[in-house]
Structure formats: structure tokens, C-alpha cells
Length: 276
Image (cartoon, rainbow, N blue to C red; front, top):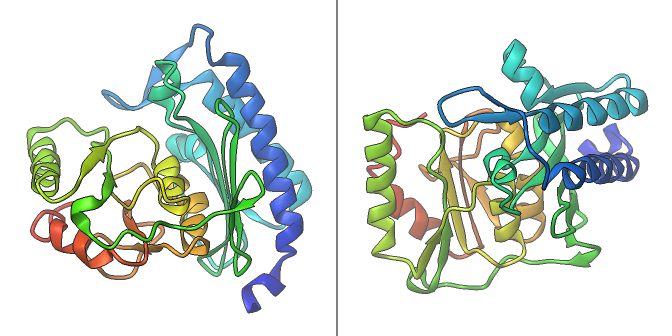
């Protein structure tokens, strides 16, 4: 409750939803159009739409909350990721799933998180293509299009749906580690999904579509700042893949329902120690 007293979280949520929906309309307008694609890495893409969405969101957040800090994917790509302080800080991924967007694969979203004292207190993730809005405020539950959602009750890893991502690195060491990890877990779970959006995977945990998720070496805090709180408020768990406490700036994450954390951590043991 002390964190919420620092800011008007309900007012912040309303502004974040408005930003997400307005940016989402830009994504919808450009989804089927030809894209101008730039490369941040060999397979790490950015489009004019990413930049336009971040500009729109940042302008509105600066206008609404001039004392708050801002961290965004595209500005961080150009200037480096700033340090996360205890100040109220908006952490924004204007278009999570850019490769999906380029290929017209509809697993894309806007992710906006408000972090106070390094703890997420507001989370918004919006997929405008299928019109799904996930929201959470600390201590008030998680919602999908206004309806309360909960993580799954699955207790057996053999019946679990696992999601992960391969990331953008293509050096042999990283690729081998990634595929070996998936191979190990594939023998234990019902099925594996690689959907191309970290934020949407977290929301999948929150609404019970997925039972476990992990990713190693993702781009930065913007990928997870919105979804982490949504998982937690839905009764799910967020943690470091080693089993320790989650660090928003670490570029590695594990998430599960309330029952399968240890099963996932055990499946990752021996595969995550050398990763980012």
C-alpha cells in the first residue's frame, strides 16, 4: 500500500490504457502495409511503427506525469538503457513482437509498466490485432478486457504448456544452449510454444493459457515491465530462472502458475548459469 500512496495508480492506469490503445491503432493501421525495416542486429528488427508508437506514448506520459522517469526500447537502443532508480518510472515497449509485426503474425502488443521503488505497480499489455487488453494494479487483481483472470491450476509438468523464446543471438554457443535447454524440457512437458512476444507470453501465464514460461537474454526491462505485475496479480509467480528473486534489469525471467515453479527451475538447472 505504501507504494501506491506515492502515485495515483488508478489515474496512471487510465493514462496507460489510453496510450496503449492509441498506439495500438497505429499498429492496426500499419499491420497489413509494407514496412520499412531496420536491423538492430542480425534478426533484431525495428520499424517506423515502433518509433511512432514510442513517440506517441512518451509524449502523453511526459504531459501527464512530468516528474516521472521514462525508459523505452527505441530510445534505449539509441542512447543506452538508463539506470532504474526508485523514482516513479514508466517502462515501455511500444511494439513487442516486431518480427511478428513484419511478417503479419498477429502476436504483437504494446507493453507499458509503471515501476516505483523498482517494484511494478501498474501493468498494461494490449494486443490491438485481436483486441485483448490485459491490465493490473498492485493489490487489485489482473484483468483481460475488464474480466478478472487467474493463472492455471495445473500441478503436473507432464500436462503443462511451456512457452519460451530463442532470442536474437545466432552465435553457435548461444544457439546450442538454447536448443539444448528446450530439448531437455520438451521431454517433460506436454508441448512448447515460441510465439515471439515476451509480454504476451507473460499474459498467457496470467490468463491460464500457458503454465510455464522462461526467456534468457531478452532485450531489456521494457519486455517484461508490463507483464510481470499482471502475472503476479493473477496468482502466478515471477522469478529468476535459477529460482532466485526476479530482477527487472537482468534480461532473464521465469514465470509459472502457483504450482510449477520448482518443476521449471529443476528443468532449467544446468542450462542457465552461463547465460545473461
